[in-house]
Image (cartoon, rainbow, N blue to C red; front, top):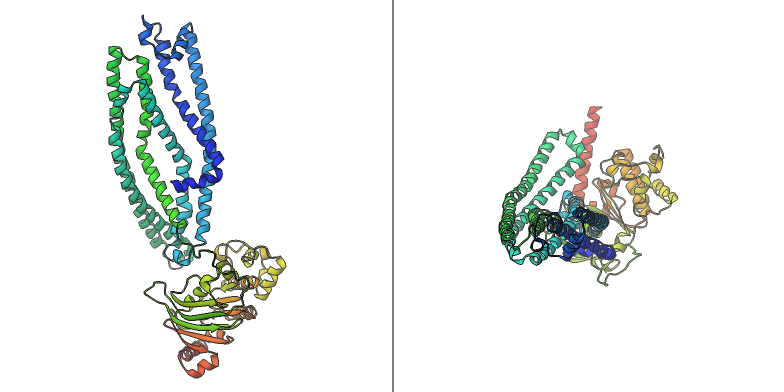
Length: 605
């Protein structure tokens, strides 16, 4: 809770004003029962009693109203005064609620922004351990629950606490002996509340984890809707969602059932206290020490005093949901960022592109190394083709160059500096990536090309598109460069998305370029255009390329062959073919496969 309140600091002035309105509005709430005492003892019963003094309220205000004659005028003045009190209270309530809403939505927005910003500073390992649905639920559902509690729950809790202690003080001042009886139910309520809090907190934690799984199912189904339809798996996806939905429902139902079981005994304890006050107070009225108006006022205050206790159970249920959401949000905020700037990071705004692996070992799990003792020295501007069977570790090597992960042992150096000590902003500003399945963001073609440089001039965007062989198809769209690509670039073909991705890399103008299967899964004509664009892109920059078709790597200066996580061969195409090692076998295998396909096509003709 204290961490949540720390977000109020930028708005402390309005928060203080909000607190003032809250306190004053709550104190005004204490006035009406006091007036009811005067109305009964000093006005309504004045003409019924022979000796007013023992039955009078005994207050100075009561004496003033008794002096007003006739009684109808006194009644009008009292009711009119009470009306003014109600109006003043509502005015304070309006300002308090308006300020509360203003503060709540800004604080909640700041927390969301903080969480989202911090997400972008976390390592890839954080996302490896969490599903997309879980991350989305942090930003949306958790922040929404916290916002709701801050908007209504905190102010409600504050008012109830003020009423509890304020009215408790008034009751003891009115009649301390009778006030002692109102404390009888409180130990039962407090003990029950402690048990209830512990019980529902763990349940809501588990329920929220199930809700995150529900998000995962929806995210998978929507993202892969074409695959779902293509394989006719709609029914299975609906069943998968249904199972996850039922799982979440059961945990939430369990939590609510506990509340439903706990709440009636709580109400019974409160009603028991009320009955005791009526009985003991009634005896005092009959015996004479207490006036009827005092008993009515005492009972009115008692109802307000017990009101916070009535809400203990729903407040705990509400607070447990919100605190669980807050814990999940702060779990993200407390996660270690990808790189801590302790002042020792080296700024490298202009790298040359020299890359050196020295006895480097890495594993996604410490006991399962994926790369072992990698040694490779790449000169600035050199193109290296990464070759190996699927799962050999090629993509992992690229992930390390991008500093998505850090080596477990050995060193990875950029321009002679340990990559761990280089400022990540400087490093990644000078690395460009073209992936097998390029990711395009919702927006226009121009916005996607200029993703790394949003302020790029249109002439530069067009130049990059021309260099990527993308300009020709872009201008054929009715909206040209303003054409919306849709989610993940869904309105474009694979080859079009790839060329826009290359244009994005060209405009970025990196010193180190990563090509991960950039020409796979496209037809021959499109591959030719993409390859031409890549040939322009790799000029004068250090390049690491992975390609399924080894023929596309023949322009590489050297080929680095990885087998079971180890670098086993390194050299030009001609040198490695002469060695007749692993690379030679891979090339021959692909040649044989190509010959088989050619013969099959000839037979079909």
